[in-house]
Amino acid sequence: GFSYKETMQKPIDSKPFLPSMDLAKYDKDSKELSVIDIYKIIWDGSFPKLLTDPKRDRKSFYRSYLQTYIERDIKDFQGISNELKFYDFIRAVSARTANLLNYNELAKDVDIDVRTAKLWLSALERSGMVKLLEPYYANITKRIIKTPKIYFLDTGLCAYLTAWDSPESLMNGAMNGAILETYVFTEILKSYWHNGDEANIFFYRDTDQREIDFVIEKNMTLYPMDVKKTASPSKADMRAFKQLQKLNKKVGDGAVICLYPTPIPIDTNVLSFPVWEI
Image 1: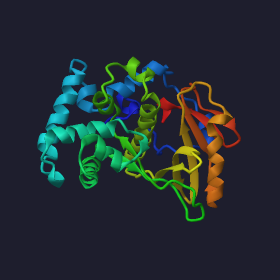
Image 2 (image 1 turned 90 degrees about the vertical axis):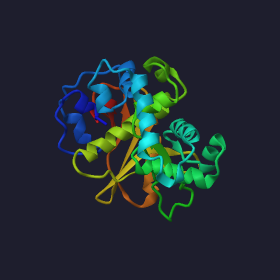
Image 3 (image 1 turned 45 degrees about the vertical axis):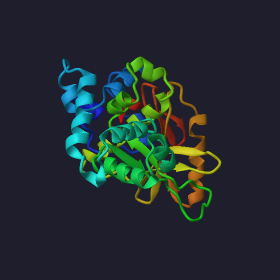
Image 4 (image 1 turned 135 degrees about the vertical axis):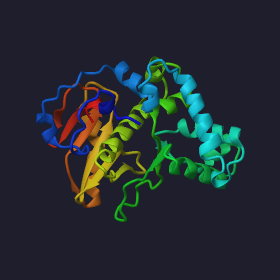
């Protein structure tokens, strides 16, 4: 799908997104977006055919897309024969975006066995509908969770599958944090893909529930990022970043990606960064 910058017909930055205190010095000319503006973008999704035709009905588009996807694209992939149950499986996965992957729960919800759940999720991943995000861990730290997280790669399709009928309901609903995190994840990925690169991106979570949403590793340095639905970022929003020091790796600048309108420092090596500037 399109990135936000592509939909605005803005020049794509020459470098993939990476937290840096230097970003606070840049003069940005982007229009400041409100919370509902952001969730409208998330709710709409990023499929080019939908965004370039304002007369196209959103629900009809997604319904047709899923039908084509299931009946033509992957019907014979990995033994997928029960189309209705596979559709239910996609919905169950969409409801878990930005959450730890649990095959047992997925299998139970759809009434399939765990082996089938693994095969079907592999089909979704290989066809580009979802992406698994692996945790960053090292043998020196035994308390780190090693289960991957799962992300839908189009937030509009995810919102459609989870039956949020408007940007307002999505913004105020139970998934508002998970879907915002999902959107930021996909925008980071696109900033790398547009440069012909892959994001070496992970997440961090330990058994004490200390979590960092995203950690990019580049040149043997770790760059932490958290996503917050706030316009008032503070040091409390980056409290888990210090956990990376236990990994005996160099820790670079970090970012709290949020709704504050401009990039500003909130600590000596952490800045807040607007969602729409990724």
